[in-house]
Image (cartoon, rainbow, N blue to C red; front, side, top):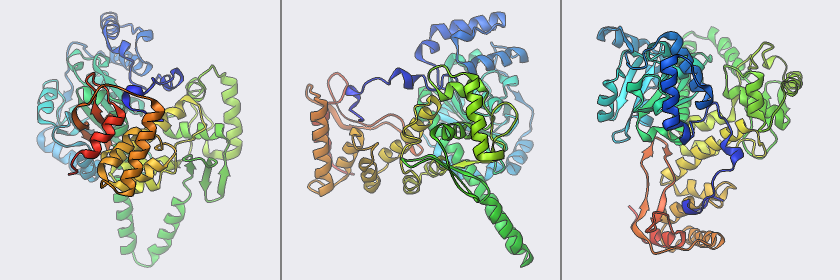
Length: 501
């Protein structure tokens, strides 16, 4: 049940520990303890690994080894304006700029968005003018190289180094002048799986949220889809211009595209690996392993895979046995060498949802989202993927004014008890209509079930946070109590009286 914010219970400890290596640092690690760890690492060159996240500790170690000065931010700038223009013109991500700007570059969001090449060079930096001036003072400018060996730990550089989505907060940055900022970055891949560059968002507290991380991940998927679409259209044009002789090649290409296996893990159905040879029904554990490897294309060590598969200790022998059984089921899809990784490209049904959300096509996203990722899985890594995707879909529904989408969401298992969604549905529908009355009745029932009571409402009927591309940072609060928390029943009644724009 998604209760009003005042009534929501804290996450269970098991969910909070889903992916310690990749999740943003707990508050304790972003305060004095983190700064003390940074001071020690900067002074001695020895990284106190117990005080920082593994991804940060590894990056600090690389920064020390590269001799990056922690007191200065001096990224390399070695291109002329003409060279920068030429680099932009020939870069594949130039084709995805409309999607990038539409999703991340809007006034008043409180951040700048950047795209790099494979060298970590900032090709485009756009966004909030005030933030752009401030980050420009520390060298975050177009043409600057923000690889780790040039600028130390930072989201675009560390994402490029690790091949993963990375969020770097405050004092986790290696260079002290950059520690006033938060950033999150994700690699962007070409159709062949190669890295084209990195997508980054840098700013203040807005960038420190889990939703910012999910938004960057979804936008990266949208850019990848845009680049692939341009390539497909170019290929189709070339084949059409080549005459009848190219038709056979087009058919071969079409056949080849169907060779890419698709992992289906959304919804309550049995997980399957779909391919030209037919569908292979997977056990839950095998589906978990394939999903985690698809989410980590660079591969996972046995220890990393064990942590993502089981909250309790899982032996390396058990992991090897599971992978061995999976290899017998899927053949050469798994690489035989260490670390564990996919030897061939694999797409997932998650990718279609992420891509649709990335281009704000909510109808397509909902059509591609039959339900949560492996809903019965308790594997920490899968739980994180499931929660991230569900949060992105929910946020996109709440951010829009599509009554049909809200109805679909509130009719789902995930949305049935979603307080904010029912409030939004009530606010957008005509008083007296069947949908409006149903929403009102559901809110009253949820209020009774939660048994929430409190003083009278003050303030506006609907307080909605800023929209971030296709997503919403935080849940919209309907009404406010004098103590800052919402009173659900009164909030619903107030929101129903609010004039609709």
